[in-house]
Length: 311
Ligand SMILES: [Zn+2]
Image (cartoon, rainbow, N blue to C red; front, side):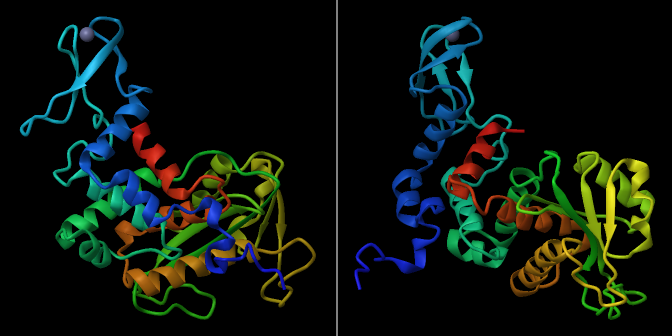
């Protein structure tokens, strides 16, 4: 057996797209290093020259330390300040940049999520701070895109959260706190998932119109809300769960159901009870991991670029 190159079988499969803790620590262990990353990414490729809006030309900029003011770089010709954090989620935070970067790193380095309690322990911040950081990362940096789905798309509804069990079809029991969720996934592609007030046609169709390219084949279960999808220009194919025809050829919803079980296992295992108000953030987080699962770039780098892009 010549298993020479299989030194690290655990990481072998995903080694290209992972960002190791070692790499992270080398690059981002100080606030200055994190700030410089944002400065270069947003204003100055070489870290020294940037376009000064006041001089209206490329100038040298220098960083002057100041404890009171937001971190900035100053034009050496006219004194104009550029703020690398302006318009980012870090702008109004009193938490240090290196902790923010570390929280982002932690959130994309686990397969099934990390609790605020765990972030609290890792970062040495209060629970409230840890929760707020995770929440902003989910709702802002991991926000789902509007890039439309095509090919073969599976659409499905489910109910998530709350403590009471639904009936065997997954519908919420009376008085339960389960939240209706609607999702669409392109086979071999991306997923979109959102909380919805209900799963009626009038609620669901606008989401399909927004996220799916016309003439796409859309597979669903037999819920009546999905009928008449031709009216919005989609090619609807329903599979009949009630008659136990789960997989008739390519007409099935296995992919989206697989995504739902990831989300439910994750929320159950890591986050326990998630309030309806915050469920969308968690859906973003699971959709983010799913949508970036095959990235060439490490998910952490993708998230960093998203953070640097600002609001
Ligand atoms: Zn200037």
